[in-house]
Image (cartoon, rainbow, N blue to C red; front, side, top):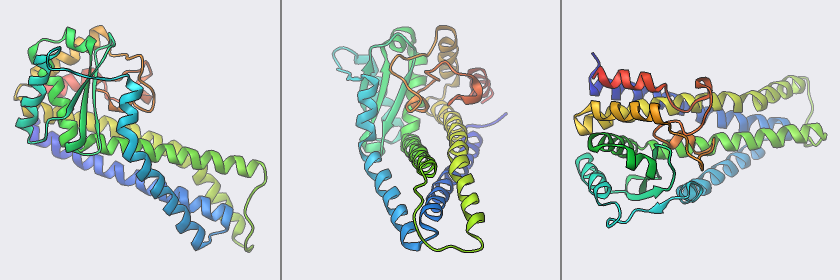
Amino acid sequence: MASFYDEIAANKRNSYFLMAIVFALVAAMVYAFSSMFFYGSDVAFYASLAFAAVYIAVTYFFADKLILSLAGAREAQKGEFPYLVNVVEGLSMAAGVPAPKIYVVDDPGLNAFATGISPDKASVVFTTGLLSSMNRAELEGVAAHEISHIKNYDSKMATLVVIMVGLMALISDFGLRSMFWGKRGGGRSGKGEGVIALFSLLIIILAPILAQVVRLALSRQREYLADATGAQLTRYPEGLASALEKIKKIGAAVQNASETTASLYFANPLTVGQLFSTHPPIDERISRLRAM
């Protein structure tokens, strides 16, 4: 029987490994782009790398505000949701993190998510469907899961990965369109140029696909980690397991969710096959919680 600590340690190791792969893929994409269009120019490579870093930093800074806006979230007032506010504040104190801002989305789907670039600038969001359906133990389990995302810096990691995968898709699309129209840059020619161009083309085509697969795997690992940390926080895994059972029965689909934001949610808010899901199977999550 796995302990809280075993689950947390294993999922952290897996997550860091997957995150390293995404960073490596971004670097490979930048290298491939500069090799194909600037024939391996060091200046072009470092300029492209600098552009990628600036793009990631600027997008990352505004990401949480954009995510809340896309979700249609409104700030939860204590007079309207007194119990929710008390639960979140109490669990935040127990977790040793600042109390996040609390938002509500008017949607019948049973779901929630956390966002923010750091624990002191985080927000948690709950759908009205979830708030009206969960009992006390279940709501505490879901809230603990989301606060665990904040404590474990999952929201930061998920946002970074989404931005990097999106950047890779942009580079790939621009590179392939430029090749189609014959807009390769001028530069040196040599014996190995054809091999380098072919290798670069393969990276530009395949790296975004691989990055998407890694993003999904990373998202699933972080969900397991938040389940384990949340269960540790409440000391009652059954509350979270029961919430997942209720979500499985009623449904977690959220109208304003998208492929970009899906990985942030407590349960998969989209109706897609498990192979392309941002979340692990609910039955597996329940099984792991009840084995703790």
